[in-house]
Amino acid sequence: MNARAPAIENKLGLWPDKVEAVVFDMDGLLLDTERVYKRVMQDLCAEWGHEMTHDMFAAFVGIPQTENVPIYHQFFGPDFDVETYETILVDRAQEEMAKGIPLKNGAKELVAGLSARGVPIAVATSTGHSAHQHLEQTGLHAYFDTIVTRMDVAQGKPHPEPFLTATARLGFAPENCIAFEDSHNGVRSASAAGLATVMVPDMLDPTDEIAAMCVAILPSLLHFKSEIDYFFGPLPGLSA
Image: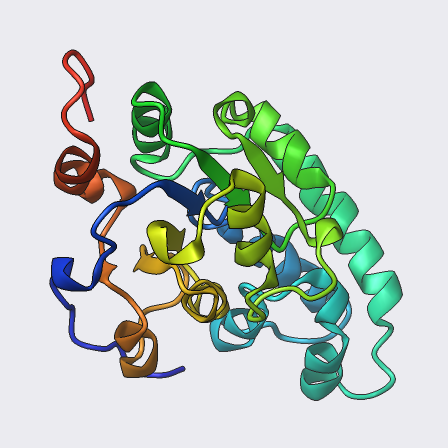
């Protein structure tokens, strides 16, 4: 795993003069789901006689499930039955999610705060159809103007298409939008699409390469409170 890059301060001079919309990743950024996936993957791998280390798991973060096959074969050999493994994995993960999906720190406050200010917001996720279910389950779905899943694009992250699709649906130029991401491939996707990209690390720390693509690296979504007021003005009565 790459070493952690030095923390960088907000680079407000590199942000849009006028921010018109915001696009969020979902897993690991709004929803605390990556730890569920990691635990389920590690348990299932152990049952199959393999070890899923943290560094191995990190290779899957931000990658659409449909593009995981080469990674499994790299770690576990060409005979690894990815289709069966993934089927069991998805079923078990969904069982765990059904018990409750915790929100990441500040997710509800930021999304609700932007919505209350009339800021157009979207989700661009590598997750498929279940993204809608998970957002509904956590009470966030209604806040978003549009939700772009892996099923809505031809190419997933790190390709820029997910963020380009989200900003097109919102009706704004990417360079006038902010993206929030937690993964390296998510940052690459948002940055390549031209959005001012904020990283909120979850399972992966920023490298020098990734930090250079970001206008800010924040400990949590709660730490965007000063910026939301700066760009969109304060909202009396809203606590963050």
